[in-house]
Each structure stands twice: as C-alpha cells, then as structure tokens.
Length: 179
Image (cartoon, rainbow, N blue to C red; front, side, top):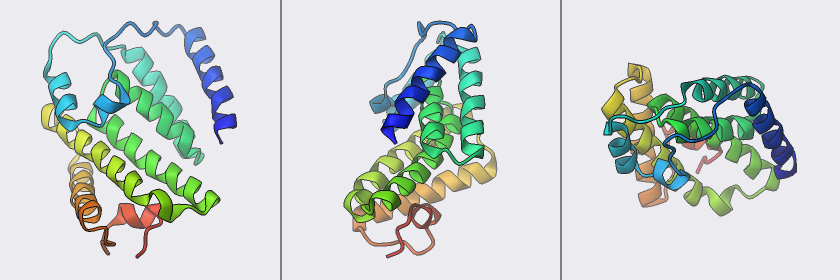
C-alpha cells in the first residue's frame, strides 16, 4: 500500500504545483496539533491567519474523488492535508471517517484487527474531539454532523476507557470491532 501511495503523493504534489497552487508559506498545523482539540480551538480563534483557500479547495476536491471510488488511504491523507492547512470541522470529520475506513481495510488485509484496535480508536477519538472543538469556534457542522461527532466521541470514550464493545457504536462496527 505504501509503495502505491508514495508515487501517488509525488504525482499529486507535481499536479498541485502545476495547477498553480501557492507554495506552502501559510500557517499550517502538524498532525500532533491537529489531534489536540484545545490547540485546534485556539488556532482557529487567532485572527489574521494566512489561509490558502485555493489549495484547500483542490485538496478537498481530490479527497472527495478518492472517497467516491473507495480509495480510503488517499482520501484520508488528502483530507488530512486539507485539515492541516485549515482545521475546519468538516475537514477533520472527513479525515476521521476516511481514516477509520482505511485502517479497517488494512487490518482486514493483514489480519491484525485485534493488534492495534485500541491505539486506532484512541487516535480516532482525538480527531472527533478536534472536530467538535473546531465546530465550537466556527459552528459550521450541520445538526446531523454534530450529532455524529458527539455520538462517536461518547462511544469511543467508553470503548477506550473500558475496552469493552459498545453495541450501538457505528464507528466501532464499521471499523470491524464487534465484541
């Protein structure tokens, strides 16, 4: 999978540059910062941020296309790049949803669902918390999206605390955790 992803990213970078996108001289987050809900919230509250909207639009368009064809690793990566440029609640939520679908596919292929499920769910919980924090500043998620984020946070908090399956937890079931 990584062997396929590396050339894709190189191609995407070349296409991105050829498309006339500005060089990355804008305020960007790191993955660690994106996973820190309080940092995301404070970053969004700061004024005068240089936002590269053209690049964000390009990345979101590319991610949606990858998501449409079920190419979850490319969709997660591209949504993640968009969220690093500007951590909107939608970008973070899309990153989280594509990310767990990608991980599910990897775990199924490698037959290692049990090995990393707690780490995966703990990290996924961070993304949903960051999406909620971003929405507390921007208030751009729809009511169903807000409910989805809140439900996933509650479910994943219970799961990561008790390490017991939560029966009505769609994200656990979609990932492949059933007991």
